[in-house]
Length: 347
Image: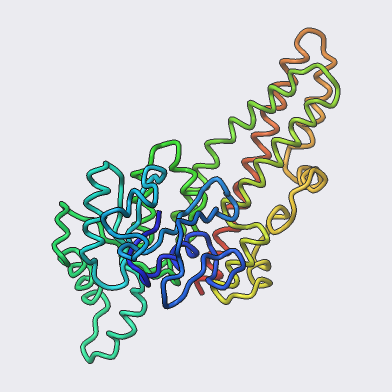
């Protein structure tokens, strides 16, 4: 849940986490006045089961501070991000204390840091590091937060790769239950090479599951079943990889809009034939023939079925090896492409 006082930049932050510009058709509405009047869920474009909830500003007539948590249905949220565009005020502190009492996680995010730095640069003896330190200390001590070692993250929703957003991402990842950590990782924008590496590692750990599913399909002694199972598994896995790295067409176009780097330029650095396209069985078959040893393994799997007694176990082994080899190769190439795209937008 993203909450805070009216005008603090909650909706812009929600859009940034979803990889959207504020003028995107599916973006949360933003403006200089309060634009969030109801508790509103915004699904991630590629992972709709992940929802970011944009909450109305605390302390409004409709959502008074004393009844705020009850009115917004606090129990449904994994954690709260409390946003302020300047100092954290009394209502923010009260909200944090109530969330703390209910044993929920919360994080303070100081937004619009880029605007503050632009203003401070007019000073003769400007130091970005000193300014950021001053802002952070001011946030911690404002209103006497009354919470031991409060976590305050300085963020610009328009430049997530700067300041404390990567630290916020690491903190959320660490604090979430284990079964939700990878999901959070996959929906995060590729703001640094470390996130791309983490995504690759997490995705690589699932390859064995797909390979076992492929082997199970090969155990069915019916012609065509193994191929059908493999096709379905591979389409699902590769689509997941492409979405996680943000290499599908909609994600690349959204990235282009947010960074002002032409879509054609992003597309030009991509090598994998499975990025920025619709993943189909026909396309996969075409790509598989180009992966080393794959054709040999596929032929060996089909031929082994006719071997008496040991044919099915052999087919299962070949199917496992084929799927593992294919997915590992595809994952490596997509991760490399994600890195190239990151480097292009960082120029």
